[in-house]
Image (cartoon, rainbow, N blue to C red; front, side, top):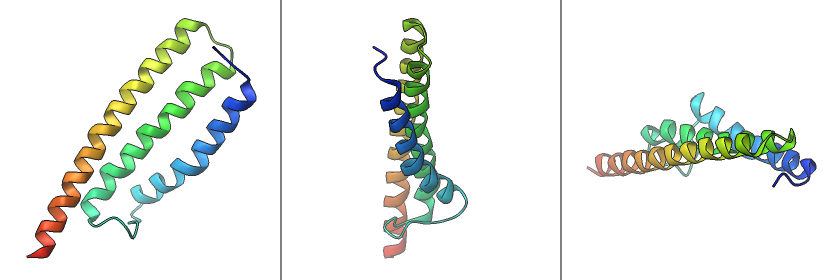
Length: 105
């Protein structure tokens, strides 16, 4: 169940490098060029943070060789973060749609 800790460390590093900087930049005020509405940026950034939270929740207990119950609890917490990310992405999509309809008038 634990696997090789090096693989978990690589996955954690990749998630940190790929998911965290855009989320922090968006929370600091940067708007990606492809995002139509500024209103969609904040929930989108928080969704990225929620998705990123899965990486340490899944990697760290396995790297430390935690008990199976701890690993299962962390996976369950990761599922909660994933559900929150889906809700935030839906909110971002609705905010972007509202931004497109109000800008078209």
